[in-house]
Image (cartoon, rainbow, N blue to C red; front, top):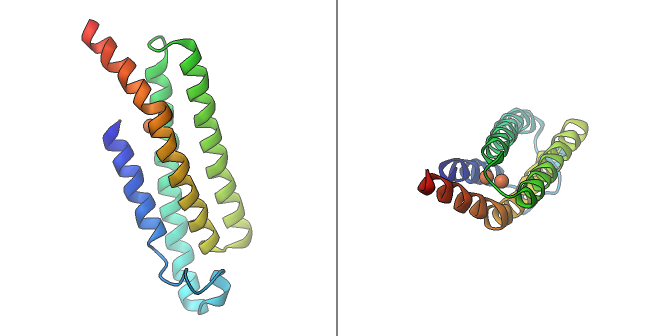
Length: 137
Ligand SMILES: [Fe+2]
Ligand SMILES: [Fe+2]
């Protein structure tokens, strides 16, 4: 689980550091069009890889939770995963509509915040439940 989290944060880092014009520009449309095309494809690939990895990771966690954690934790944790999925979906929707990679990168930056809180609020607790179960087996 922790390795996944590091991997996810690593991908976020690659995405948010991808564009070096973000301080000066608000939109990729203000960049040279040849540059714009290259960036668009790369950002799309990176974001897709990150979204797929995150959704898969959350699914695996949800499977771990079955029959192992108290119902209250499981419901709240799954709800939190759905909110993350929604946030990711919106980033991709907006990006495919307007093609502004800078905005997509900023969305991913906000997801970093959401995920860091999620690791602290939910995943740490899940890890504790899992290791308690392993110890009692
Ligand atoms: Fe989680
Ligand atoms: Fe997680």
